[in-house]
Image (cartoon, rainbow, N blue to C red; front, side):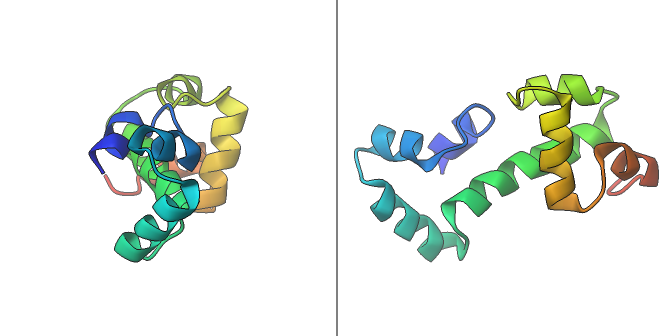
Length: 100
């Protein structure tokens, strides 16, 4: 978990974590699912989504600045990622003041 916390903003794929831990991706996926009840991709995406929510509600960062903070290619990629998780755009999320 410490490895994920240290790298989730830069490394989105399980193969990075598996190689750092010297285990196979299949084995690590099984462990993550057993511990969290979620797939590795869902778990890592959830970490990124939680950070995006925090940045939207507790900072005045623009979508582009948040995309850069989360190491996403651009604000469009951030918007698509966020909307897939939240069901609303980052702008609407911020306007509604969710979690403030």
